[in-house]
Image (tube, rainbow, N blue to C red; front, side, top):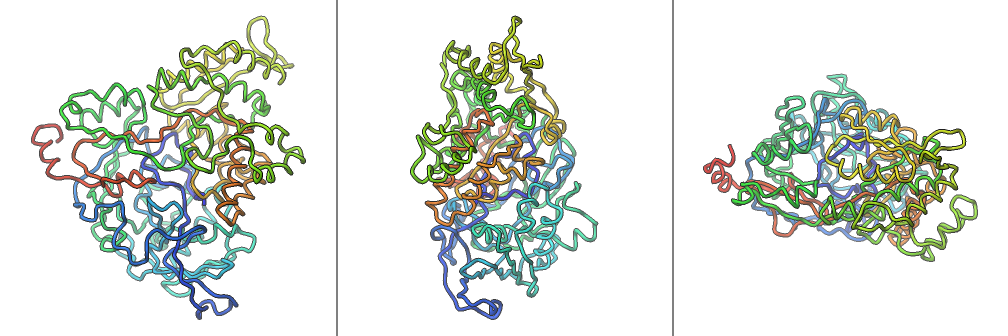
Length: 639
């Protein structure tokens, strides 16, 4: 299922890479047992297992020795350092106020965990087993009795219940709207047993996944400080994970250190993982300064997000002499859908014809060739690279879902007869739009009531010009934005770019003070409740994900169908129909994505020869090579 995101991080203009699929559910090879004393009230058999899945079997058995993709003999020690842009003033990812520090949740753990080579799998981490009946009306987690917080105090069921209540009562509004009625009750059975009983109206496929994704925060720590989940904090929440805050210097750096007393250090799940003693984040004002910092060795690991750099700039001495390595590592996640989204709360963007016309002004083919060196792809689907993407005309199953919505007037007939909407193709040799494209855009705008005057400016019946403001933090992409604005001018549209700092960017996105803004859509292999955060009408008023303020009854109904799917085939059909409908609304202008990670690093690290498909894992299963580090230091490459 789609992870329901309980934090406000999506409001930020950039995120750390090395991302996983956004799942919270898992897969299992399950053993049936008779109902035990804890479930005596149920007249049905109860399943006990070390994991769970809506679909299929677990990849790993209960007694696995180590994950397939790690080096179980990886050495411990050393430091990995990365960069982040802008500033930070908080360590709370879950509050709207403040800008959270990079990697601020690195010390958090959940009851269950997922692995980078099992897209449907969720396994016990802080539990030894879970029990649940056939109707999934409840789940009981038997917690480990050796889990400790980073201050050495034991973690118990009271902490889990406390944390669950925090998110239900103090979580960001878009999260609470979806999950506030998910549980009938959360009960502490004993210090190491907790039971979640689900509201009968809740999504069945999300039940165990949502409960199993509950983090463990220290109740004692929160109560002693009077801390709230929805308020900023100058220290991370007391958690149980392998990394904890070491030091920070506001707007310059933050350093995390490996917890020397990590409770799970000797478990099979930890073999070959959590290998660095320190993880350091250096802050830079912009990407140019950050790149210069990498060249000089201020930090040592970089995921390159600028194609021009990757194509032209990695020719500095430390690359030429072999001190810096470059790799292109395949990303097996659902394609990252980076786009500009319209603010649909503004009346001028509520006509789909206007949005379609403006989207014609972006020439990806020319942009990719001229600016991105043909290194990127343009997003087509919200599930690019998977069999969840809509293609061609609707299948029989998709048509069956869409037909009633067409009959009710929620979509036009053309959604049933036409190809799935895709970005318009342009000529790659020139950014200037063809006469055919300009004519098409002009016709759409004329039909929508935007007439062009003798001065070349389009106005509506009230004489108001058609104006468009893009907000942006990063000057790197001016080379891409300015040609787009030039094409808008040819259409009679007055467009301009407003560059703002990080805090202004966060606030303007939150308050809806924009016409177009960047949004990165991160879908996954088992979409479910999180779809409401991304696209649901109920989150449109205040959401870090539904940034475009989409309110569409047809989309809402298709989301409900996807959330309610109980078989993988039904889920695929529903998701394809939803993908088709989302693209049909044209609320976004797809920009680009990379199906690889462009990685550059000083040659002091190692990683497994076969990488897992769902995670780059630089903080998880890479390691520090002391011998190579000593050699580079001896040469004066690194301090």
